[in-house]
Length: 407
Ligand SMILES: NC(=O)N[C@@H](CC(=O)O)C(=O)O
Ligand SMILES: [Zn+2]
Ligand SMILES: [Zn+2]
Image (cartoon, rainbow, N blue to C red):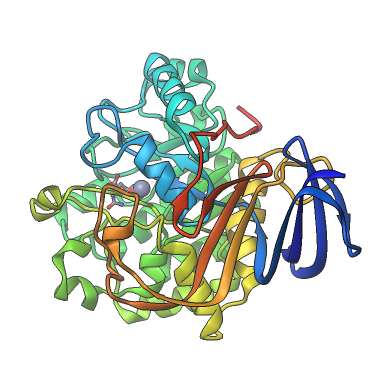
């Protein structure tokens, strides 16, 4: 008799499997096409059971910016959006640029996180501290974004990185010359990052790639140690949306059709979809802050795209579960006996309307406000525990630090 049995249609790497999974002590103990007995049995027939989806790029703020988001509000939003693990960005206030602040942030997550987490460290001419922190991954900015911190010498910051380095690739000088950040601001930075990658041969993850020139340069170089992310807002929105709604100011900016088309033409070769969840208060947005909230819409937007026939349900598993595990070296999260029983359960047929007032994020606004979507996250399971069901967060903060190969 298992502690818990999940029954339904499991969506795994490129295949689906109708059956039951027996769970004991939070881990998968049995996978069977036969019925299994459990103290608790969840018949999830009619839904799709995905391995726990992850978001490798979120800004949870907290510290001195609690009005924008806290670890508590942001990780509740993650579970609500079907995200079982978040990769936290270090451009906080104060920024995570020394080992003491890293320790403080780790303690904060240990107390408050509802979702699992990986924590990062901002490298900018602080290599000793970077090594001392032993972060789960690292971050560098080639040009200013929120918080205004960026590398004086990107290549030496990249050379220092003790682990996977995620990079904001917009060129600092070009930002000064062209503050509206046209495509070449990203394309020049990406090409420079690729030259450093060719030289250093160290893992690099290029964030929020938004341009035709950028994605094509990365794919042409095709370096096995270079991965990249694309956000839902750069896939589903264009510059025209921003012209109609200044709240959609984001770095890198929303692009014209030509660039959005290039992302879609290369969709199968995009390794990771990540939200770049960047919450700001409405006042900060009205004062020109850049960033868009995305945790509670990203999976549903992709499910809606499945229903529209533009992507496949397996794409979601590949780009929000399999590849984050591969790129960041996460252990114990694949769908296998003995691994964690962490799942994202979706109703592919559920139609609903995006209502930001129902969000857990403090940033209660969305580019998709009022949009009818087909496909919804209905349940999130962490280590055999239902932690979100039908929009309700269940229980206390149960998030744990991901087991990442640390540099
Ligand atoms: N993307 C944004 O426009 N803003 C992000 C920072 C970043 O990801 O560059 C933020 O932290 O607000
Ligand atoms: Zn960025
Ligand atoms: Zn970001």
